[in-house]
Image (cartoon, rainbow, N blue to C red; front, side, top):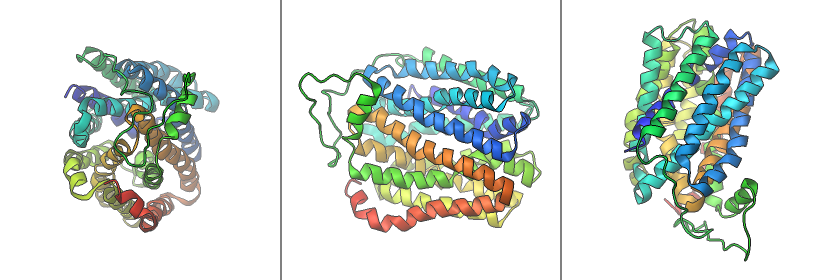
Length: 404
């Protein structure tokens, strides 16, 4: 699969960034509350700006060129991020970085879906290379002096070099810079029963990404939005383990093993992600989403009840279900229920709304909870959000099951 190496390198960027972002911001002199706010700004930028870019990618079919552009944007903004230690400038640099960081994933997911075609249930077998890249980078960071956690510029250099390697892989892999044709006439849809085709008005021409988005959103059915809401609760519940884990391990457990713990969680997700196609065929995407919500709630409670290295290990192992099944099930859920022509739009709503908005809210809330109530309260509070999704599921299950 030609996307294996690019995905490996793209998520190597994630391996550095996810592990060290709060450490980097702490090294720049920010408190937990300010770190939460800055990470919230990062998430807001990451779900607003890619929305307008992705619709143009869908229309142009230039997926590879977009990924290269996102990678270069990430690399170029890193020097100002560490050189200018002022809250407003840090926030601006993070916002720009987020456009590339958050924009590359839905475009890469959409390209994988285009390449796979009717074999979309094999998504997990391709996406697993991203998890392997994350694990490899996290292990490298844990067992080598590649990054000095007390020097923000060292962290930034590792992120930038990883981003440039990703851009180079996209450029060199044959076929990734090809221009993909549109799926067909405007409004052509997938087989989802609640995603009806919409015929454009005579003479109508989309003039902006926003106009295209309105048109795309009007073609998404009720089951799509119900699923996005459940996914939102899941990713909100994952904020403590996805954004504050490194600070928790360093400040609360007084350990320097956060990169190794990140590697453990990513390694745990690999077999589940690889087998996700079998799980989807066996249980359907809706049941997997709800099972993952329950696992996310349990994972947070494990961190809260067992504030130790052993508790952290157990929590990271639960990432196998919390993300290893949750993310592929969510991607396939979106692919089943949106018009084919608007695949990038559908994926961007997933990454921007379900993932981005939940993470933005969770980061801001989480930073203040840590500073005022501590990490135990953080994990306990965030266990409630996925639990709400599980409780709500019986009310919407009929609507979701119809398409599994």
